[in-house]
Amino acid sequence: MLELDDRYVEYSVSTITTTLLERAKTGEEDAWSCVVYLYGPLVYKWCRKRGLSREATRDVAQNVFEVVARKLKDFRREDASNTFRGWLRAISDNKISDYWRDQYKCPDRVSVEDPHRSLEQVQFREEIDNGSDVQDSLDIFERVLQYGKARVNPKHWEVFWRVIVDEEDRHEIAASLEIKRANVDVIVSRVLAKLKETFGDVFEDRGSPFHEPRQESDGHQ
Image 1 (cartoon, rainbow, N blue to C red):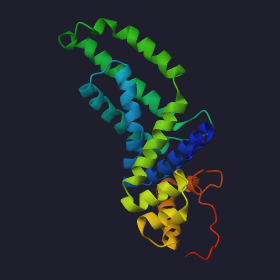
Image 2 (image 1 turned 120 degrees about the horizontal axis):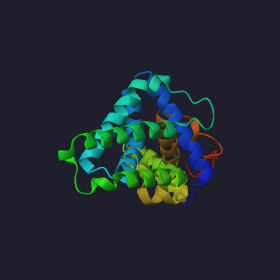
Image 3 (image 1 turned 135 degrees about the vertical axis):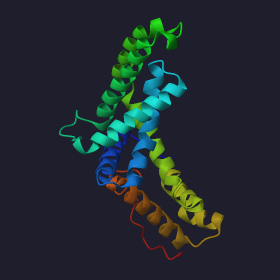
Image 4 (image 1 turned 180 degrees about the horizontal axis):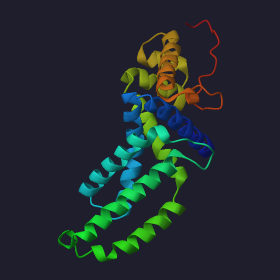
């Protein structure tokens, strides 16, 4: 079974995000949709930790991504510390703070729990600063695979997963699915090509556990 090294996951998420952002900057709707799909749950988590209701979270998250869409062309990753996730978090934090400021300006909308929100905001900041970036990256990478799976023939994805992730013998896979052994290689190559087309070269990197090893002719095809 495939085991993902934390460093690989961090590298992959960073590379995939960079690829998608560059495509999104040119106006590619698919790339933008993928960015929202990958990072929307993270914004949702930040909002909920600040005490926002589900309804308020939807509104704030929409405001966050409206700002991101408007300012995306200005975003530049000049060094390792200048990450998209950090930029997104800063925008989210500002929009969440704006939300609570607006709530306090309208006392009729403030519930009995709201006086405790200022403390929650402090706790939220500590949680974010000390939170698990690795787990966030793992969650994002899992969504990368989910996004890819949704765009591939289900049977092809099964073959890809059994070969690359479960590391099953290709002959056994071919026999169980009643397809030619050669077709297993073709399917795996096509799925990897599709993932590369969407997410960039990270799935072709030789350091990647998803990199397809060179296949040798064995006379069984």
